[in-house]
Amino acid sequence: MTFSCGNHDFDTDTCKKLKGPCIMGRPGCVLEGKVKFSEDIEKRLQEFEEASAGRRRRRKRR
Image 1: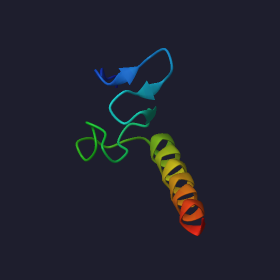
Image 2: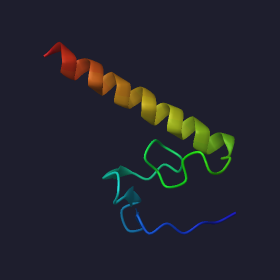
Image 3: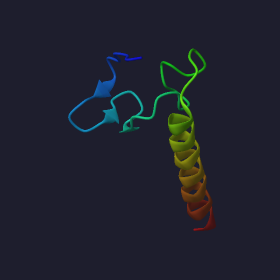
């Protein structure tokens, strides 16, 4: 399956809407909750969310 998203910057593989890496289905994504993703995408999304949570925890300590 392929898709086209007006927010995807193909040159940098980033999301113009969320101003970060393009990970289909992440919170704020136009596809969130609308489609089922492969295990690879779900794993990448989980890794991104864990990394984001770690950054938030480090910022709170300051």
